Length: 132
Ligand SMILES: [Zn+2]
Image (cartoon, rainbow, N blue to C red; front, top):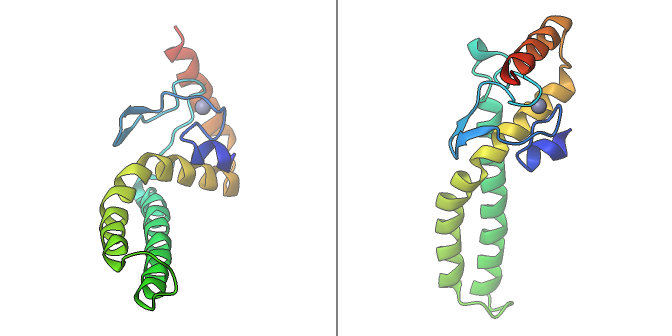
């Protein structure tokens, strides 16, 4: 389920086409009707932001570690390349990871809190409506 989210697919059915464009997730999966923002009053996608931030900080730590090795001439990389790498990581990775962070967070939430019968019925209703 989480792997489906990591690759940007619906965590419940594995269906695609979840995004209107890169930064806009549909309200529901077009295949199975799963509602992605299950708790809009609780800032549901704050978890997605945290996942994305964790990824960027992890990559920056690796980059900083390599920078230390490069400064100490342990590895044969010019240190400026790692500074450029850090800027690229800080700017590009959050943008690239944004869609997958949302679907991954949806998958984690779905794994921790399975759909209740009301949500299952709503998903089926929306899926049936969308397929007409
Ligand atoms: Zn689905």
